[in-house]
Image (cartoon, rainbow, N blue to C red; front, side, top):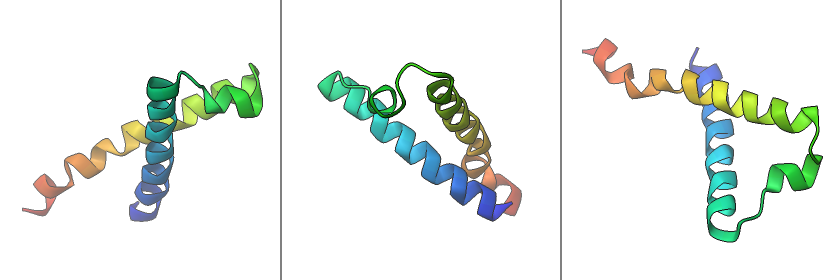
Length: 65
């Protein structure tokens, strides 16, 4: 499970960087790379799922005590 969380953490960080680019520069890097296609939606879905999986990192310290 630790490997999955690390992979998801990388996707979540990339997603945060993309949102930062959107906020600062009003430029959507994902749509620029993939256009307005189903692949763009899939990328956003993957990042969203990874963010939910990373909730385990937030509560991981509770399980170890």
